[in-house]
Length: 112
Image (cartoon, rainbow, N blue to C red; front, side, top):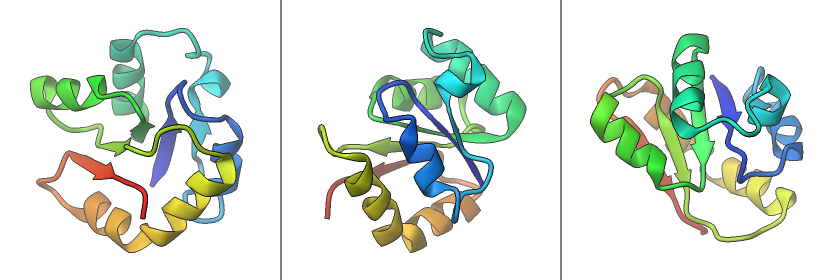
């Protein structure tokens, strides 16, 4: 599954996640760096991305508009790219189950 990393995440995280989430990218790489949340939501829906964000607004959009896209909401605070990549490794099974679910739209991930 391809992940679309929101503006509040480091662009280098997309590269770090490629071994497991091939095709993942950052909004800056898609020309959406200054786009509003709804534009990013629409792009993710049209292109088959899962949005990864630290922004609570995407949970609200998910409630209002439904899924797809699915949303992974990181509740980590400020941390390095390496810490975020490690968190994705630690939560790989949980993320895989979420992505396979037909009913779950938002996955909230907190630090281990």
